[in-house]
Length: 140
Image (cartoon, rainbow, N blue to C red):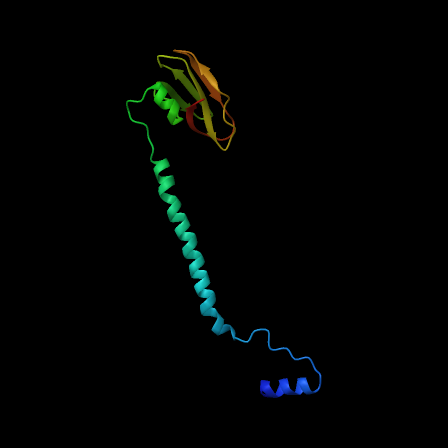
């Protein structure tokens, strides 16, 4: 093998273009740097997920107090307990036993939600669907 210094001197003396090798470091010398970068990137991703987890956990753990009223439930989003729900396959029966009229919406998973339904006091309503699954009833 000819030393690099000899090749370089020959190229310069004979007006031949000389370019050093594209990668002066062999692959095994570069691996620790790449490993560090990969470890740091995965650590940064894990920290971003962990830092976001407490906020979502706080939201997911929110449940209204058992003595909620219709106005408290309106702020929470889900319909109050005085809106009774009888869920069967592809159908939900809603009954308003609240002291006032309520406007509610049936929320389905993987399907369009219902329109806003205005239920007068002691009024019953049936909502049917063909695709999706029942999730909840919320005020609107």
